[in-house]
Amino acid sequence: MRNISLIFKKVWKSAFVFASLSFLIVTVTQAQDVVEGRTLFKDKCASCHALDHDITGPALTAKVNELDEAFLIPWIKNNVALIASGNKQAIEASKFSPSEMKTFPTLTDDQIKSIIAYAKVGEPKKVAEAGAAVKDEGTSSLSIVGIIAIIILSIIVLVVLGRAVKMLERLILQKQGIAIVEEEGVSLATGVRRLFKNKKFVAFFVLCLIIVLGSFGWMGMWETGVHTGYQPVQPIKFSHELHAGINQIDCQYCHSGAFKSKNSTIPSLNVCMNCHKNVQARTEDGQISPEIQKIYNALGYDADKQTYDKAKEKPIEWVRVHNLPDFAYFNHSQHVVVGEAAIRKEKGIDPKDPVCFACHGPVNTMEEIYQYSPLTMKWCINCHKDADISGKKNDAFYANIIAAHEKIKKGEKITPAMLGGLECGKCHY
Amino acid sequence: MKGSILAMNKKSIVYGTFMVLVTVVMLSACRDKRSTGLEYARNMYDPIAYNQDQPNKNFANGATAQTPPANTDPIGFVRYEYANTKEGYEASAALVNPLPLTEKNLLEGKHFFTVFCAPCHGDKGDGQGHIVKLDKGISGVPAYHGADAVSSRGGAMATMPAGKIYHTIMYGLNAMGSHASQLTPTERWKVVMYVQQLQKIK
Image (cartoon, rainbow over all chains, first blue to last red; front, side):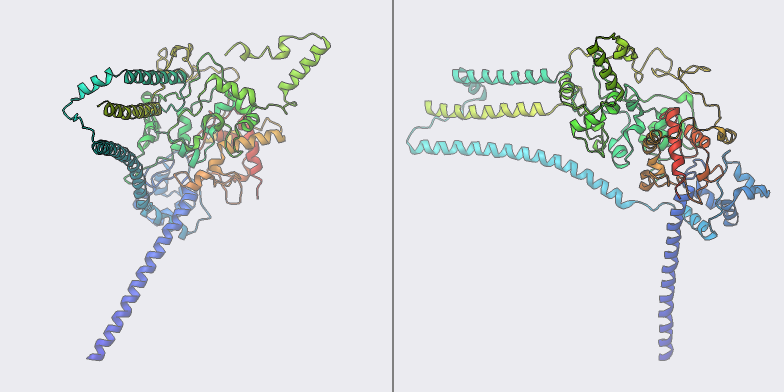
């Protein structure tokens, strides 16, 4: 009996170990399948398919759950051949969109199975990141509370010290044998009235008033019409820090006018849609980010059907940040193309950074855009006094000027046209 | 008696000065970033004519920037006759790059490629741009070269003719949007010229 129970125990133990091991292996291989499938999906499928919603192709999670592998594998390998062979399911599937699906003859059956496994499981949940984000917000509000606490504490300390000084003074007076006049019965109003009877105090009070009002007036005059630091609330919480900083998209991608024209153009929504047709920053429960949804609403775009409705279009009214007075002419292209080298040198811009930073500041760190430079006349003039634009002798503009000067020296005929007098912008701007 | 009042006055003088200084510093520091602040003669800031990105009540859709009326072309506009269809795409193969292959054109093409294409297609056209690496929803970007780089409209990427590349920039394809509003026709051809250099990478 004892032997039997021992054997049973041994068998049971090894069976348990085997079972748990095989379970582990199965989960590991499955996980590996999913990881491999994810890589393959991102590489081969993601340009036309998403898991949870239709883009160029249909949402894949629903499709792999609906269709079986026996159809999916030949379809993914070569859908054209499958349609040509008259497979009913294939013909039905081809009706989804007029654009044909690419063929993938190099994918093996196992690779396709991995992709299907990934499509069924979906994206791993990102719990840790969400926790970190909440923590971040906590610190910022904490620091504000801290500052307020410090202010309150310092006020309390001041009051206590004031009381202590009073007490000490009274003690000194007592020791010197001078009678103390109790003033506790005096009300605040009479105290203030008594203060204002003191000529020295009145003079001091008036002086303070003049200093305060004068400095406010002085600062007010200097800051009139200067919008440095202006950071209006925009209709969409567009972050330059995310787009220009983390994603490293060049300024010109959206503001392509800055290198070609007077204006650095505010991008029209089709430029947003170049990426945001696909990048939807969906939440865990599949909701499109509300800020991206604002782009769709403005365009009348239906993300599920991928159709535009002209009737629902409503332009986004961005709030202008940089507003140079209309009586001053400024041309972006003149500065960032012709003057680039000089501006970089003058403002000490890192060669890796765009020349735009010279006036617009570190835009790639601005969560919300604000005006970095004062845009005052003094600010323009100072740069124009200092910037070094020599070393441009081979430039057509300077060649023209040198040629004109030679003519002037020789006393030859000179016309306004030779000095750029036919440029449209000389009169029309 | 006098002594004590003077002592009190001195204290209040010091205290008063301190408070005044604190208020001045605090008030001058807290400028409302949401407001433009004090402005004098605002009408001199605002344009008399409409800026193109301003609201405009004279048009039905309320915008100043209008698209040209039907069947008209803006001055200097270059028409593109190939439709955004599979047939149009195939026919566009007949177009050749009107620009000569010079170093200057290539350098400019490289600049435009870096700005407008490289975020997804990668600096070397391998489909591994910065945005793809960040993995935020754009992936599966085709490479321009390599044996298994095949266009979703058929044919190897490495041998795609200039006209078809131009067609793709013009209209976009699948996840890629049209880049016609950001690049002028000449700039598009410069990009095509540079892309054709990237196709030669082995």
